[in-house]
Length: 228
Image 1: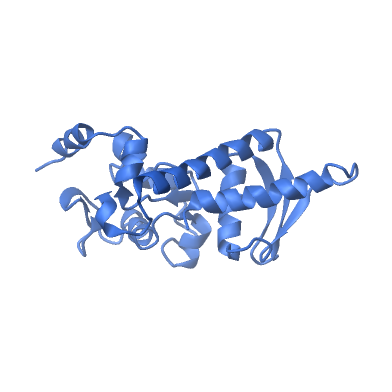
Image 2: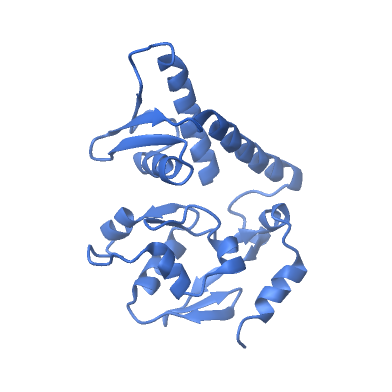
C-alpha cells in the first residue's frame, strides 16, 4: 500500500469523526486508537498522523504507540487538506488504471538507487557518491534502502540502532552530505523529509516520471552531470 493511500484512510477516518464532534459544542478533539483504521497497523497510523501534523499541518496531534491512541484536533486547513489528499489518491488510482501499472512490478522501474558493501551509492548502476565508513549518512541510507516508500522517523532510526541519541544531526543535512540535492532530491526524496523524518522513493517508476513531466532528455542531462 502506498503512503498516499494510508494518508487518505487516516484523513477519511478523521473527517467522519470531526463531522460527529462538530455537532457537540463542548468537544474539540477526537481520538484515534491503534486498531481503529482497517488495513493500517499502529506504525502506519503513527507515521501518517505525524506527517499530516508536522508536514501538511492539517491536524494537531499528541500520543504514541505506547499510549495506544492519538488525540487529534483539526486545523483550519483540514477540509481543504482532505480534498488535496483525496485528489492525490484518486490521481494515483487513475494512473494505475489508465497506464496499467501495478506497484511492486520490477519491469516498470526506471530509476533505482543502490549502495554496495563499500558504501558507494549507485543510480542505475552509475556511481553517484561514496559515503564514509560507519557514517550517519551510510547507516541512514542503508536503512532507507531496506525500507523504501515509508516515512522513517528519527525515533525509528534510533530503535533500529541506525542512530544513537547523540546523533542529533538534522536529517536533511544527511541528504546534503550525500549530494542528494536539487533535481536528484526531488526525484528520490519528493516528500516527507524534515529535520526528524526521511522518505525514500525507490525505485522510481515510469508513470511517476510522466506525471511529473520528467523526460528522457532530463534524465540524460542528470546522468551526464555525474562523474565518470
